[in-house]
Amino acid sequence: MIKEIIFTILWSFSPLGEAKVGIPYGMHQNLNIYFVFILAVVTNILVFPFMMFFLDKINKHLLKWYFYKKIALWIARRAKAGSGKKIKKHGFWGILLFVMIPLPGTGVYAGSIATYMFKIERKKAFLANAIGITISSVIIWFASYYSINGIA
Image (tube, rainbow, N blue to C red; front, side, top):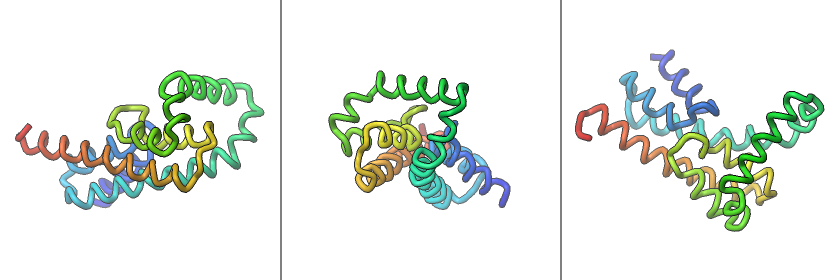
């Protein structure tokens, strides 16, 4: 059971899955469905302060390396080309709506990068990310619950 909890946390913190993978994983491992929801959401919300620290303190040092800089610029261009204008224009609501979409690439990692790139106020952005990932997680939780129980 400890192993399943750790993997649920790791999936929920991972940029490859976030809570969108952590919730179904934990539920499929027969962990308590309410515990899984809270664990995955809280873990995913904690990505925001981690990413802000990384972008503020570590990113500028890593940009000195060509390979990292090339990847960072590619990510920045994709972010601006996608929903960048809408997020910049709508700020809090733009981030909230973007993060709440339960699709790959629309979670707290992307919301944190948008916050950093568009210089959105951190407290508002944290709240937008937290609300957005909670709504996204509710959608994923219900979809997982109903698919596991054969109702959907």
